Amino acid sequence: MPEPAFSRRATLRGLGAAGLLAALTGCGVPAAYVAENRRGGPDRSDRERTLTFSNWPLYIDTDDNDEERRPTLEAFTERTGIEVRYSEEVNDNDEFFGKVSPALMNHQDTGHDIVVVSDWMAARFVHLGWAQTLDRARQPNVAAHLDPQLRAPAFDRGRLHTVPWQSGITGIAYNRKALGREIKSVRDLWHPGLAGKVTLFSGLDESFALLMQGNGVDVTRWTESDFHRMCDQVESMVKKRHIRRFTGNDYTSDLSKGDVLACQAYSGDAIQLKADNPDIEFVVPEEGAELWAESMLVPNLARHKANAEALIDHYYAPEVAAELAAAVNYVCPVPAAREVLARSQDKETAALAENPLIFPDEQMRARLAVARDISSAERRSLAARWNAIVGL
Image (cartoon, rainbow, N blue to C red; front, side):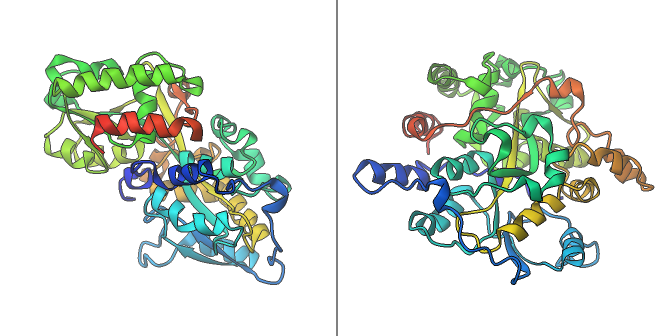
């Protein structure tokens, strides 16, 4: 199993590198935005059959007998002749942003052809003009198979600059046996019987959408007043000591040990949590839950853009997407991969096709929404409010 998803959807630390960019721009430093016609550089793909791919740790299929081998990458190289220099370099969204932002601000090559970041971070790249427009003519699989529910996030209409690597759901995990009842609603987290037994995510971008949905907000077009109403509610629960603490990926340990009975959680973790303890349940609340993605993008001046586009399209072939989904157990952004898994002769693999946390059914999808991202203009004040509550 991959490491817990929270490390890939890392907490916002203060204003982070993006906040620093905004502050510098406000102080008279030239704007960091790069116009469309200045993002590309000479593409060496034809003469250099290689590319550099930077991803999160433990987020790709590996060979059962040799963890250094990655079968889906090897299949791509065998088919195209393009060698992939793969690195598990992305350990934290803001940390990685800080690493590449000096080059991008100064219109220099970052040394990366593909990077994978959470969509709220991908939004920063897109808004700054730091992600190149992808040539869909080179990506027939993406055009044909990308999950319709992920095709048009507010920050990148039409997915012109980003393509989901994997997706997931932010919902609620709880210990049904210890609690003695079902949880069906975000409002159930505030039940007096759960006082001191609830945790929430500390990261602003990770936590806000589900909590707003609990208040009946359409998170595809939430407002600042919606945000502050949610913060008032959470702040009240903190003062009452109803919330045990705000967590990172250690929420899984709290739930497994019984220190908490209910918490914000990611669907990718829920599969492993339930495998370890059948009493653990994951629920998409009746008010709805957030559908998120971590996406591939090609940074400005990447040297092998065409090769990168070919690799992105490779992962949207249903057979390849199925192999990856079977390895990492996140929501697959290629619904057609479900039929591939269902045909497997291996019973455990075939069972994955029926798992709604990998392939959400229509009933679940009706309650999922892709949240509007926090704009750079909003982030300074909203992060300050949230971090004051959380204690960051």
